[in-house]
Structures are given as structure tokens and as C-alpha cells.
Image (tube, rainbow, N blue to C red; front, top):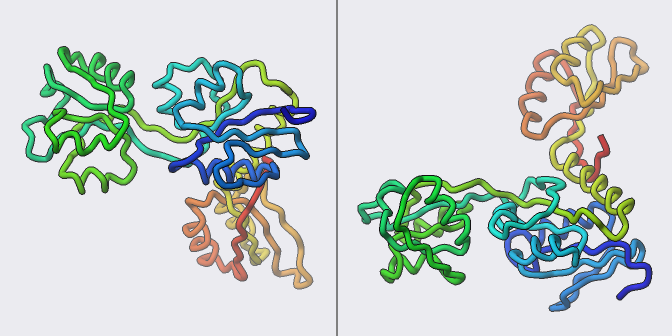
Length: 287
């Protein structure tokens, strides 16, 4: 135990979600050091313990109240049937759970797999998928290793597996025939955290991290005669910040813009005569 322990957070000990989870917590203000194979880190300034564990175990630890918050894949939460609160979708670790078969196999739909053997790490999700599709007689077996190779070895006729880029499927002569679900990293929690007030505060901090990931700050000089057009192009989160310059024919503008729209917005601002357009990266934004 640590003195005055206020919160426990579980995150993956390895894999695609670990680094992004650590970065999110760090940008939310938690100060910690990750050391070798140590399975936890302590944030002494906030009384928080970060526990590194298997991704699939995070929903269980949260559901049982062993930890207060957890970061894991939304697919893992569904697979475990964990009764947890999904506080936020975090926007990273996006992937899909797909049904895949060998490229030369005669299977092209879920119905073609009736009476066949399917390998999966996510057994519950696989079975529920075939039930929804009305496909009977499918034998789903659990495989926790390299699922893709099992098709080549003839152990299974198809797999239900996580797909990010699809490169692994191509390398193993597999093709997707359907998608089971879309998934991403989520922040989950228990209904009774150790310190509810600090738990809520940390979630608000994480909201600030997520907002910073979504928006960028644009600063530019705009002809005073064009300010209404500029505001129409960049209305901002609530309203842009507009300041007068020494030359009264120009105005200085600061505004939040969604990152996905930034280049198009800059192009439009230039077209109406705006100059000195600067983009600044945000680390945190409370909106």
C-alpha cells in the first residue's frame, strides 16, 4: 500500500495501447516513472497507483473494484461482459474485429461457415456474431497465439481476429469477409471509486487531453473589412478572440479549429486576404 492511496488505475503492460495510455495519463498531470519489469508505478504527489497488467484483465479488475479506472480496448470490455462504466472513448488504438478466411477458400459470407471450425481470441464475440447472423453449427475454439497461422495449418477454416492495417492478413494469404465490430481504447471505471472527487477531477483532466488532440490553435492577422468572413470560416469553440492592432485596418485573431479541418481553413483564410497565419499544437484544453 502507499500512504493516502486515492486512486488505482490499470493499463496494458504491453501492446499497442500501452504507450498511448501512458502518454494520456502523463498529459493529464500524473507524475510517475516506468521502471523495467516493475508491474506498478506510484504517483506520490496524487496518491495514485498505476498498475500494468494484461489488456484482457483490465475490465475484470475494474468490475471487481480492485482498481478504480482502467484503459483497455472496447472489444475487451464486451468480451469479458464486464459491468463497468465507460467514461470516455479515447480515440486511439482503433481497430476492427473481423472474420477472415484463406484467399483461396470457398467461403465468402458468414453463412458459408455453417458447420465449420473458427479460431478466435474473442470467443464470446465470435459466438455472438454467428448467432446474430443466424449461422448454426459453427464450432468456435479459443486460440491465444498466432491465430492467422492456424488457417494455413488447416486447424481452422476461418478466424475472428483483430485487424488494424490488414497487413498481417495479406502476409498470411487471408482476406476479410465481414466485420464483427469496430473498437478503440476506452477509459472505464467502477461505480464506487476510492476517492470519487479525485476520480472525477482526473476524468476532467483527460477530457482536456482529448480536446487538445482534437483541436489546434490558429492565430492570424485579418483585414478589418474581412473580419465577418473570417469569423464565418473560423467560428471557434465559442467565439474567436479578436484584438485591435496598431494599424486599425488590421485585426489579430486567435481561434480553435478542428485538426482535421485545419488546412482547408488556412486555405480559405488566405483567399480572403488573411496573413501571418500560425498553427500551434495544444497539450491540454479545458473546453
